[in-house]
Image 1 (cartoon, helix red, strand yellow):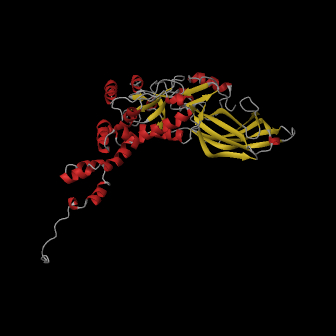
Image 2 (cartoon, one colour; image 1 turned 120 degrees about the vertical axis):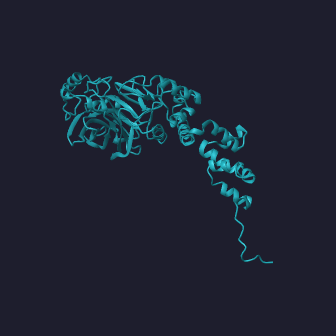
Length: 455
């Protein structure tokens, strides 16, 4: 018998759906909504506990693998809930940081196993709470989360956060464990409420994280300190910015390491940046350049920006044996951000006259300074053939740019009169006695050794 035309259809309920389409709908829910379904009805409680629904969340938020699941001998839902009870406050950061740590360990484990051996085990939540009570500041959750995975590293060489070496200068930064970092927490003017993240045992250099928005810094900003050498106020500290947050700072560094952006040299991570377009080939010889900024040898006041560059000269392995040659001299054209040009010419490179033959590679490191925040260099090498002594030819050095990181000027500088500290900012050479005299007058800390401008 047909139903009366005026009878209203019954309201559609999710609970009336068959099990399979209902499970499909639940599979699109986030963990919060899936947990809420447990309290709506008996049937939804049963379906939302369907274990495969929680597999996706365990892999997405906690990076739990099938192998780890079998070792724990728990259901996916039980694993999610137990992990959430321990690390739930870090759920928006954990997967990103855990993947970064896993990628770094895998990459360095094959190339620098000694460095991986220096990593410390994770800290407990109560340890982080105790540090907050000790320093009187809250630690950002992304920082806390990272230390729940690894508690930094031992104070060893090489450091996890990269190295840099010149003939008379060496830097290698360790990622500090939480207790060492807390011991170096700063309350003095100029670095008020700043926590050290890294430390170099050779130079004393650290990268700091601002735990409060004071003295012109943004909260959780990461930077190298750079004392203002022209201010009478010792709290006048400029800053070279290296990150806006711990998450961005750490993961961007790891990405450069594991993608080969930073080379591994002698079991250490060297923070040279290579522009893939910065390559030039002349016949069978290819020259490529990578560069790095050294904050510990630089200053904003007076303007003195120190860069190092690493050059690779390689002859194709397919070149004929008679193409073997020796480098005689170099020519540089150096241009700063103002357009001022300086030309430098001299014998060999770093005191050597390398011989290049098919398949052979020669690499060397040198340095330069600018009084502007950026500049570029280009030039050529002059070689002579070993088989034809009277044959000389030039090999192009590609143009490579050097740019210092973003920096902030100390707020204390505004309170200082600098009239007595005038400096000629147009002077861009460091290879003169005049420069050394000026350094002493301004009391600029000298580097570990004097670096000629273009050796």
